[in-house]
Length: 431
Picture 1 (cartoon, rainbow, N blue to C red):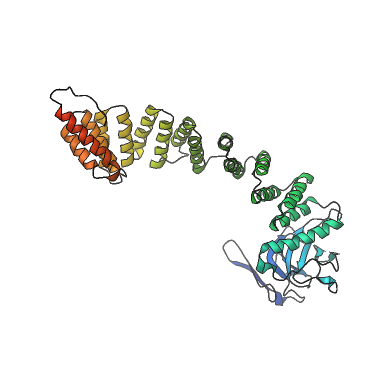
Picture 2: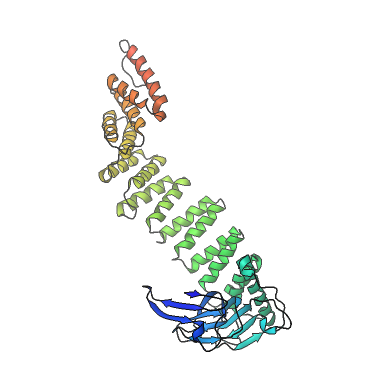
């Protein structure tokens, strides 16, 4: 943790249990460390001892909480650390001071120093613009200063290292100069023997920010080939296809990820099942959910069982839907599931079982469509030639807004059928 930028600077290192490891103040050092901090800390193994140091901007604190070196040149707004010079291996600290650049003040120009704090490059009296107030105006101006620094560096170095191009691409992206960001990040990736994964991610972010979804999809395909175990890349590619209206490709990517063993979490499996349903692949949704509920990768909740039943119904597999709801009731005896059971039994015209299922549904306090259950029970009693019970059920169904209209129609139909009951044989009628 760090406090202070322009004058006194304090740091504290804590372990994972928030116990203090060391404490440091800029005033405890002999040399000038006060006022040398930027607007954030960077970490890098500056002295190559296998442990990261803290780079404040114009000074470095060793991993043991002691000052390693300081430039003593004041607070910088922008600082980066990277191995950017192929002719001089090792880390370089790049910084842009927080002052207007004037010819009379060459020491205030953008500077590069090596990992020992020695001045490696200095562009002298080069006007790079007014830096004060950039932080108040936001990070875009801050990145603009970094862009200027890199452009000056690239003007002197004909063949910058891939890491330098990647950092420049990040700065361009922060300044909203997306075409240049794409150019530099793409060059970094192409020129490096082993590009860092983070460079791909940064380039992908630039494509998103500039709404270049086709380019994002092409890059994600490449990233999946390089990092096939990264689930988020599969999900992002599916999302890009969905964003561009290509639902078939979107679900195909998810399906391939599932077959590759990348999608194993419950939420991912449910998401795939819902994509199947949305794109008309209800049978695949039913197979996936049934398999996942059986092996326990999807929890046997009322909602998940209901999703399985819906999948089989959309696939026109009524018997499998009925079997699913009956298995669901063995573990989750919810009133809504009893009502769904009754509806499926009604499709098979098993009226006695419909009566029993609706009674079980109405006995539960959690039933969400009570009027529908009364209505369905009345229909079952009507077909079983129980006019008194049917009338009672329809009258109860009439008390609910959602079922009132149908209940009144059935009551009229019931009165008509009883009026002619003496001259006509009973028959199954619909309202």
